[in-house]
Length: 342
Image 1 (cartoon, rainbow, N blue to C red):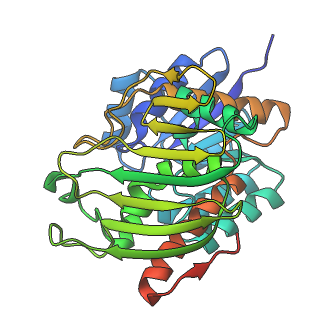
Image 2: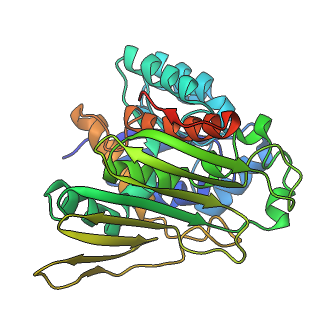
């Protein structure tokens, strides 16, 4: 019988729902040993909503020998302290995106957890959408040939109520704007499919719609390490919000990935379609999505822990997207193209 992996959950805020539902689905693989929030009200609400246990301190999880791994879904600026503390306590860590608010700090977390001999995963669940996995396999098999043009558009909307939450859109709380907080999932998929960006020229702005100190409009021209070029277009000012979209053109064909729907055209082949929701994360409710990709991601992480393998969405594999985001912001601030080194 396969040993169940003991898991604890740190953070019971807005992002908890898909994690809780996934953990309930995975009872054959996971023994859930408790969720923690510093507020008793959130712990009580979590227990009532999901019929899962809570604990009254982080140490209750980190000192429990039955806990093999923790999932951390707290605000970005708390990630380093919690992830490193958990690794030093001998726990593997699955960390909500972003790893941290800058590339340098993200890399510090990755290297610190690796030094402890623990596995570090990051919650990039878009990689585990069926359409995304199908496209990645096609690219790995060379079905689209040499990549020539690779672009993405994240034209989302967030209403005033979203930004009315304390600290929302502010650097001290969120760590970043549309690039780090909203578009990072699509940007991660873009790089997971096409490889890292070598050079970027960007412009990032804060619109007149909101009083905040982070960007809600960002665009760039990019050159990939493989020689392909493309455009990155990200915003949360596009009412009422549209599905995130990745477009790829190669020497043997092209593909359009729109949220969870894929269409692939190749010369001499029938059109390949993978049907799925095109709701994406573009609308007013950022949590209006299926938890299935989260379930696949957590299951994949659990398997990696059990088998001593690198997680499919490892912390180290998340570094290129942090390099791209930092590069876009730096290029915009300087008004010059920037060569990336990750």
